[in-house]
Amino acid sequence: MSTTQDLIIYGAGGNGIKFFNSLKDNGYNIIFFLDLYSKKQEHNGIKIYRPHTSPTKNCTVLISVSCYSRQIADDLKEQGYNICLDFNQCLKRFPTLLNQFILPEKLLDCTNETKNNLNKIKNLNLMFKDEESKNALQRILAFRLAPSSKTYIENDWQVQYFPNDLPLSSVLKRPIVMLDCGAFTGDTLPIALSFFKKHKIDVSSISLFEPNLNNNVVLQEVIEKFTTPEYLLINYPCGVWSKNTILNFELGAETSHIVNTKSERSVQVPVVSLDAVAYGYQPNLIKMDVEGAEIEAIKGARKIIRQYRPTLAISVYHKASHLWEVAFLINDINPNYNYYLRTHGDLGNEIILYALPT
Image (cartoon, rainbow, N blue to C red; front, side, top):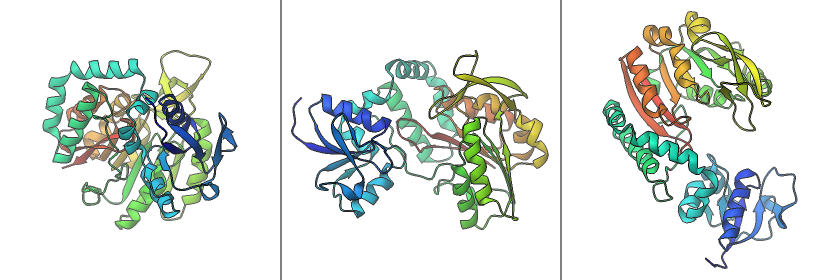
């Protein structure tokens, strides 16, 4: 393919380089990068500018930064960049980009796992309370069975864990006793506090579980920033699991996860059962994004789910089977829930199952 279209890539990090490699190989002309934070001056001979210093604003800008790409596109338009494509639009307009982000073997495993469990997925569909959840499931299914830019699962642009199209504010018990499992660097905390304030919901405590000690240092700084006499913020430097034990934890640049065997990149970390450490809090809201350990973590919260029926927001995208296994497990523990599904992230990430108590 040959084209003379001039393009600008926003983001000179990992995603931006993937955009560059794919587009360059397909004949597109990248005239420069835009990046707010990069310390590099250029990549492969292509200059990197801050948005306010770029030599032109008249070419199409491709946003390579995921999750926040629509907000970035809106900000750039306000600065005079007339044509800005968010991450979803980029993958739709330039189909070869998808190959840079999804490993073929991982996608094949996901496709096969889905094909082998279509009856379970059919039963899952019957559990959902609203049409948007059923539509989300169909979009996920279409992409898994025939992955392409045409079936690509788009970000729904809702606020993750607190989407405004769910009746969260009406079902949340008061005051809030929240468990944030997989707190990372505290990114969910200000979003949660903002939601509670907006809906005039009192907060008693928020417990934050994060086993990665590097993340935990930043998390503690965020906790200190938002600490007031009105509520408790409690930092647990550990992971969540089905029991209290020590597990191997592999550290990654962006994500970390539990592994079966020790390696050069792994460390041993404590993990706890929520029933063992938080049952006495009587939690009424649990957010969980624990990099594939969701099933074990839910097993470790059986008593809490059975007795207190907390509102649940659980990640179901780390493993293909979690899409249906998480809902079935929760339903086995306590059938008194309504279920909703939302697709908050790019590339099939940040798919969240919401279980709201009846």
